Length: 265
Image 1 (tube, rainbow, N blue to C red):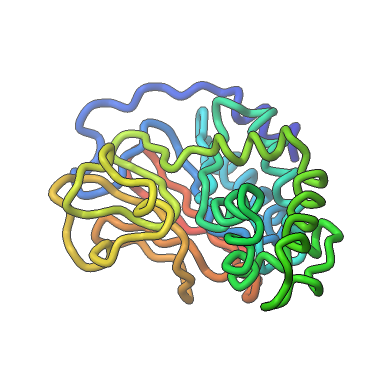
Image 2 (tube, helix red, strand yellow; image 1 turned 180 degrees about the vertical axis):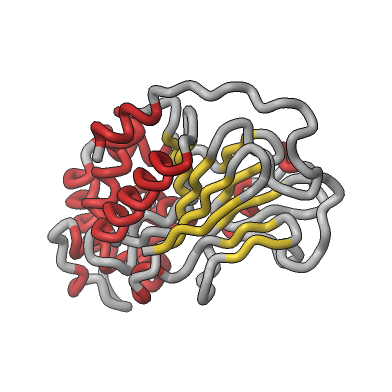
């Protein structure tokens, strides 16, 4: 798998000719693959990488970009495996692979910084599965758990993650863009330019994201809100198909001319 990606990522793209795409389509500078929320499904991550690898080879994509929209942890059984694999990909292909931060990564980092105050919310959001994946029993972290129980769990998680992985998580960007295509975790404020969005909106979404039209030609690929199937319309590409519970991990392949195809496990 890595050998195939290394060969394909090493092929540099030709610049697309001017005016090759319609103005109402997403137009990245190079073939782009964007993957929805993983939530601890390391098995599905491997499957979607195989599908992307095959699509790159079959389409002749040059210098493709691979973007993950966040929410790598929680709910599913192998958050540790997902983080390790994504770190490997970003290490081996730093010019081609981008991992964005999701709200679940933010909640875990907040828990590590302030365990007793931030821990209960994170566990309610699926953090107990992440703790178990790192062999930390969340049984002692009930409603009336004392602060030292949260501190102990956070200390054990920090040790299991390691400083390098924690630093990698802290440094994850909130957005990625190429041409008029943007990738974020949750959504964007349609009344503000894409380069002027707040971290809260990018991580948690905006109430008008799905309804109000944008004043620019930006297309925004995102996850965060599970739905039955991936969808691209009205400048939005929704990719969260609830992989951790449905087994359906979705990605979109977008060519510089704006044509796209969905890939799904």
